[in-house]
Length: 281
Ligand SMILES: C[S@@+](CC[C@H](N)C(=O)[O-])C[C@H]1O[C@@H](n2cnc3c(N)ncnc32)[C@H](O)[C@@H]1O
Image (cartoon, rainbow, N blue to C red; front, side):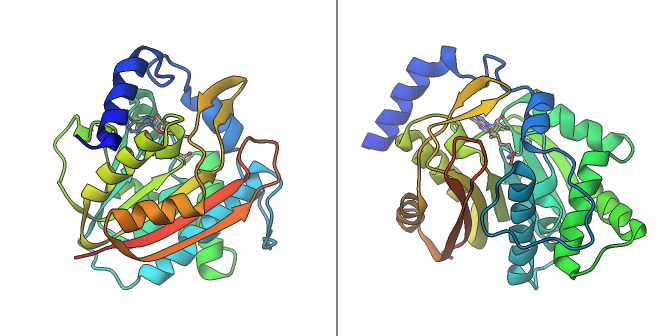
């Protein structure tokens, strides 16, 4: 047994009773209110170098996905994408969804999957429309029309299927393809525990889901040991760009692009890390 596996097993055994996600500390509505307020409608978005609010951070994320989607083109339309630990959010899929035909959207918590299912089944949601508008604006360099926004919303809804998945145990709770051409995971694996061994274990499980020659798109909090949802403190693993690079090299990735951005908001992280990496064939 490797030291990473041992550390992971110890963590699971000791912490299963105090897992904040099992304890109900993550409430989808509160999380969305804290980190994903509706974005202001703006004719021109400033290219903010150092975000000072969550909305500026979210615009920076949408810029990253729009740029990444362009970089990964052309993709074959039949591809499957896996979203790991998607939470109650869909902002991360607006641009990347153009690359694939199906998105297996997963999370550990049923409540998060329910939140996404509600969005798929019900009419347009003001919050997510504002994110779709901004994403299209970054993709196209101009304000999108209402028809374009609604069309992307509909296309995205049609591509998503939902499943519970535990990235620590690498366990799907529903049938799912074994490998994916594109795997995306955002602020998930560093937000499970404070252990770097557990973080690496989760990253290696994600890596196993990527087909040879496939890609990983990942965003992460930089150097956070906690994050906060309306006064409730949840754990985070302090990682930096070097940790991510070393882990990806160990796991057999090549063409690794890692960038980051300082964040000056009130939250506990010093910045955000952006990753695009190709799995060796
Ligand atoms: C900080 S939230 C990130 C949510 C979303 N991806 C985002 O970009 O805002 C962390 C997410 O990790 C999920 N999570 C926690 N433990 C997990 C596990 N063992 N397997 C899969 N997801 C898990 C949580 O339910 C939560 O949705």
